[in-house]
Image 1 (spheres, helix red, strand yellow):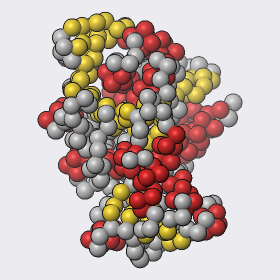
Image 2 (cartoon, rainbow, N blue to C red):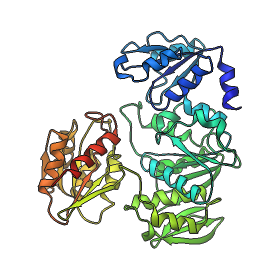
Image 3 (cartoon, rainbow, N blue to C red):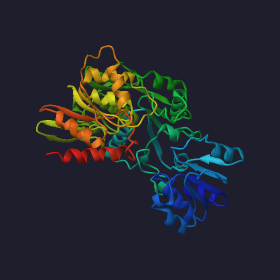
Length: 459
């Protein structure tokens, strides 16, 4: 089915699109331009929606504000990823016969080319970007999108069937992804995350498993052998399993042996490169490279892998080097919205760092983070709604003896300035919050950009 055929199939049906954001706005415009009856719903008031007037000129009915879901009358509902599918108004509409779907689910149905999809708790964006870079280096046409920020559905009919759609998928997108799995599925790792939205870890894990649950012969599943949860996905996929591992030799996949990255296929091994060739810092980025190459080795030569590893500078907000001032290096790791992600950031450096942490709680405990901070942090600056919880996680550990010293600062800007004040030549200042940004910022990108703005203004 093509996108045009899909739109034609729902043209005479009542369509509700929940969420007027980045992923759904192109879809709303496309449906309205095709003459569909569209109602667009959003919790924000009209004054906060720049596209409100434009959408009404296109004939779209708007349902806005706190009561935006009160009256759903639809045959087809497109859900934005951040909205749970079992909210009472949505569940009631489905009981009455509405079909619940999403921009990404329809894209999977109409995409004419191979789909390579990546999910996991940490490393999704970097691994997705690496896959894209490797395929482009091999001369392939690549369409990069999904949770990484660019919606692809409305471009589907212009895509080259010989190309590759490379998409990052969140657990929220995967919750209702019941129709089709990608041709190549990659799961970087799994750890407690988004428990402020998911009912529990089981629901979160089940959502992630949808990325490979409907794969069959000819598909590939790339799994982290060192993570017990992702390793368990081997039992639910029908695709060829390729492992990646930092610790264990694998008969099929990519692994690390004595600081050399090895590719194995049916038990035959090939040395790819020393892991020291990877330009971006952190042991977790070795895993990201292994996962990416396991996904694309059918199309990408080892030589192109080495070239990419030596030249790729990384993704913004992911242990991004900002500047060096008076011997102090500043890094932006604003993407780190969970304790496990912050741990990976801390382990990226050989020395103890000055850490800025805190933000909005996701329902994930900070107990393990306290241990990591004691072991890898020279001085700690906590801020945001979780500042007291993070401080308690450190001070509550039996091994804590006043190190690292902890500074509690209410204002984010002042927290950055405090980190700069207590830093000495040779230190590293790392923003790696272990929490979401929603207490003060719209998203982690805004938080990271503000951090960089403050750092670049230091004198």
